[in-house]
Length: 202
Length: 108
Image (tube, rainbow over the protein chains, first blue to last red):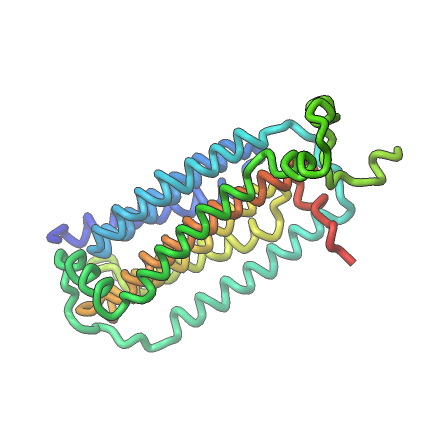
């Protein structure tokens, strides 16, 4: 890729600003829908960083999987559980936020210190640039063949697990084994099973 | 170190990855909405991916093993998001809330 280094740096700073402000918006905004859309922006910015690193295949995979699948999944989940509820105030929540903020800043300072003080062995071997997609394919079908196959099994397990977990009629199926009368199941009140016992008594 | 004329140094990528990771950790601790917790986990996974890609490009330029690892991390993250959101849906069906502070069934 032959982009002049000034252009590269401008792109890098723009992407950095997008990613950092988007990530701050994801954790700080109170509206969860805005957070989800900003998360999509963060994913796009990260894909742009991958393009700057000459990794076009991984950038495409990032956009397809993260923006196209994970972010849409999160938006669907938000739509399914979107109920306006007033969160109970918790004693010392502000104190907890500040304390964890200090801990996170400490972690950040530690990471920056490691980053700047370690003598990285650069420059390494010359980057292969545009041939990276070919090289990834070679890796996946020679020395990373077993993890590749395991990843497909993992995806299958995750798919079946997600379907089983999110099915609506698991509780009704249990009842239908125990009770024969179907009308009782239909007329049964739809109280959640695991609801807090204290809140029912009150 | 950060001269404005040369190519982008490796440290700049590591810096932005650590910023993203720390924001993710803070969001993971402090979010009360369960969906936002999952989003924070995705942010942290992306920070790790940036690290892997930067090292793969700067230090391991001819055998790009970091890129292969990133592909695997993306795969696992997709599986994690699917299962996590399914668990969240079933939690919401049982407790009819997404407040993390009310999921304290196993708290001692």
